Image (tube, rainbow, N blue to C red; front, side, top):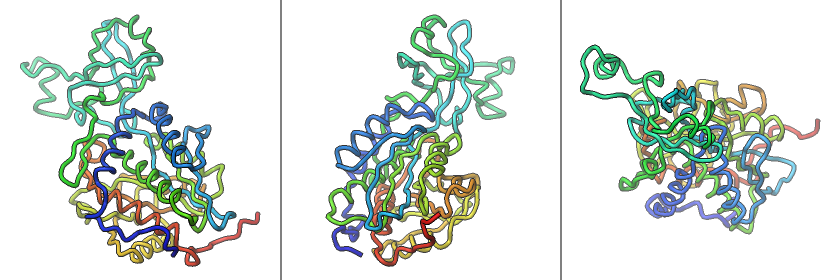
Length: 372
């Protein structure tokens, strides 16, 4: 492995302040699935400032290309840039807005508070509302206290605007709704970051770090690497499927969160997690083994997990036959799809692991010929 990249940095030597700042910037750029332009502009600029080739494709993916020593071979590393949220279902006569979920979002996760409605012409801030608590059994809100969690059908957004005013702002059925920006800003808990939408803005920060590492290095990765900030992952991995259907790559490695739960033998902290299986299928043993070997080469301890109720760009692309091999590198996360908490060292170590893997040299496995 070339000596031009230093993979020996210990977690204690990682610049957690820089990682926190970059993730915070990404979180504060709204990007609900399918309406991701706010973060797209920032990403195109950030990759461009690093001097790498970058573009946005027809599906909304932001793609940076890092040329490799073997120019006829390529892999992709993806981290989705979209976030879960809600979508406007109906606007009532009094201006109240009814929502339905966009991705795996639940209203009780957000609680009552500010919601940004991303209108075609203006962003309108309203209040996600569940109704009063000082009620009797005659009120439908009583069931929320005693019997069942709040559902989207039980909640509404109070805007204090009339339908004509909302229409002028471009708020309509299909408008995306996300947590209000003043409630989104991350907080620091020692070496951990706590925030909405770490899934998957923290992984996009890893993509930027990989671009930074290779743009600053005099050597190239072993094969061409596409860094894909993928679009619309939360609603079916649409961006990754489009990319993998049109760009021939040997493998896709997805960057993701890994849920911390008693059912999984995963520990919180700075150790990344390699997924072995998820709800879409089994990840490639050879590719995962190569990633484990790369971790060993740089003295990085990793964890292994088999998950249910989970999917990634890689596992979905493999399931649909778009790519032969897939793997998933992830970081342990509390409260997934909610107010998430993750160790900054685990996020940084995902970058270290993938940078080492891309630099493996002659040990980088060649599995097939490009000839058709």
